[in-house]
Image (cartoon, rainbow, N blue to C red; front, side, top):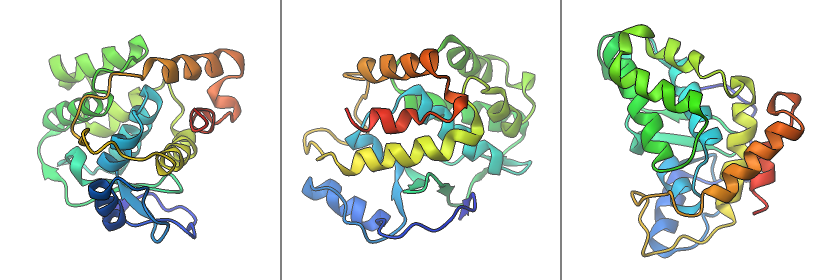
Length: 207
């Protein structure tokens, strides 16, 4: 399983715990290190920040000839580490198209800055512009990749505080209620700048 090497985190929870909690509607127990991304999304709608951070992390780990994994195979740890299983195979254009589809799948109907939307459209219409999935991930410069783990760690933590709505599966649309979180993100960017070390995820986790 691929994943960035980060310091181990004690008191985390496992993907199996997350699957069980999805069925019971309870928050996952702290007993492992990673949780399925779809289970996190089922509790807290992702903003463009989390979506970009996840795609950046995945694209950075792909070798030539590999395509991004489906969203159901992606795991996120409490330290913001993104990991996944065996990837598909394909040329550069196929990989870029898959990366664009993954970004869209995470965003669903959520609001996003124009550069993010333009990147997904370019990946769909003219993937040859990027050449590879890694290049596509690197093109998402509206959010600094080095801060991704910090934001994703805060995102996972915020999901642990939420109780899953049994009537709302992980594959449901996540557009409703996302606007307030996006406004908070944009305000944080305007006032302090994401690159200055402000954790937007930490801000949003208090919602």
